[in-house]
Length: 382
Ligand SMILES: [Zn+2]
Image (cartoon, rainbow, N blue to C red; front, side, top):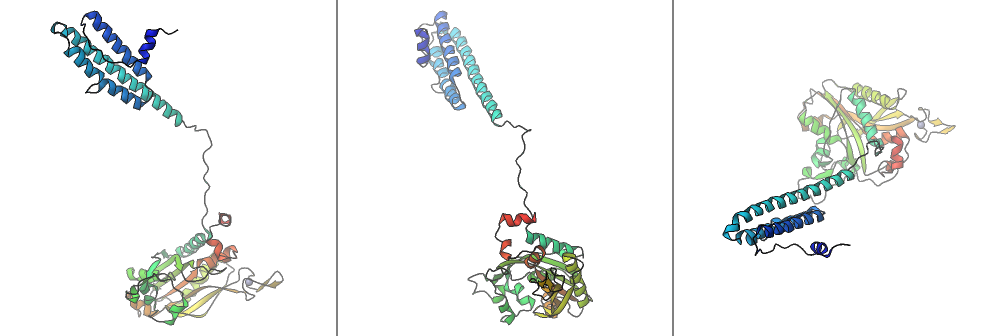
């Protein structure tokens, strides 16, 4: 059973009464009712936003309950009661202030407790295992090859994938309209017809422009390898891709001969494919080297015999040799573009396709597997 009077108290919102009787007993009663109301309201607050409404109802400068108390009780009091009323009003303000502050503390306590619960961390639980990726076979092969040349004292240089016609062709001794340009189906950036030919942008067709950029900023002796991505307008098939990777090398110094080139590449191929691998060089043509050569290595599948498992070797087409890279002595014309003294220095350059090496090394039968992003394929190289 709840007495009617107290039920009324909870239902009817508190209002500050006008006082007519300023006797101590009447004042006591008014103060008691007010404090009971503020305590009751404070107890009902359940969130910080409710607390703000509650605080403003009591503390607001204009028409908050405390400002009403000032007007309705203190200002309205007759002169002889002013002192007594003033003391009680001060007391009321202090108690209301404390009650409101305590309500906020309770609220924040609740919030921080619930936050602590939500952020509770059990350090004994097993962690989230993030699968570790593997190096892509193309990058892995590239790094291995770069490592071979690093051990020979070469440094690594990189250059932009979008090149000018000048760096990709002209400075490499492909003059404008040179037929050699037709051998590389080049992807040009569109709408550049208004520019002079040598300034037109294209996707580099080889990493050789990096050799020019290197010689422009570095005086001999130069020993660099340039790994990177290149583009040609090739249709996709098992052995061709419009995107592939190359590693080129360049060594320029005094008295560098073709013997140095042969020795260097023979060593690099043995380091990459095993010490029993042999190399052979035969004449070829590149605009930026003279003389030029293609390099074959003895077939790593049949040991150079040309047959295996009782039949002809598929990988070398029974020849015992696999063509792997191009090379040559830097054409003296190229030195003219980079301000080197062609009478004083000589050097060699070589270049190879990284995918081609990776295909041989890992026995991959389709170049597209490198670019499809099939995790089942890539995981085998982890
Ligand atoms: Zn073979």
